[in-house]
Image (cartoon, rainbow, N blue to C red; front, side, top):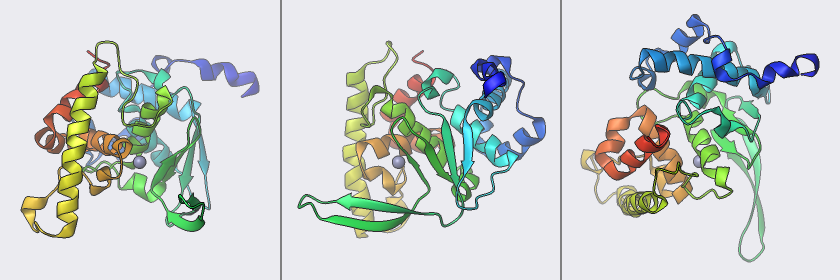
Length: 258
Ligand SMILES: [Zn+2]
């Protein structure tokens, strides 16, 4: 900051690509990067350098965030905004990185006003206009093709809340229809809630019950959106065959509405 704060105003295209050894370490075994063109890889690596420079990485509770962790977080975080553009992340600035077993003291208040305090071991969380909290072990487990990616998940919440409402619908490019989005996601969410309930009640045990998304998607429309985004990047064929309309909406959205 201070004398060098002007550097922070540079655009992603002014940055050098993230170092090749970091890029190689992060992409190894992670299919989301394999489908990118050479131009997209260059743009992503430049955007990741920009992300590391402009966002503050803060280690919590003895976490050790090394360069490869920063690169992994940056590359995953930039994947959803590669075509949408970096301005989508201009309303927050801090990544909090938590170590294994990091426990967060939570307070909930029920309808009767009873306050319950509990400890919540978390993989990630966002606060409105505020920091993004990520568990480092979960970051390291993200993106290996099983539909799990805590960074993309939390970034999806950041995109969603940009219009002030965490409701599973981010502000859409002009070329997209909010009604079509709501129809695609509403139908899929309703269907998924039924399937998830069935699968957890054990009435359909075995392979046939395998859900297209992680069960956590049944939690709420905003979690459904965040989990669908994880799956879109990490196991796209699962989302495409399970919920083709949702897949199509996300494909258009992440392409910048084109
Ligand atoms: Zn979530």
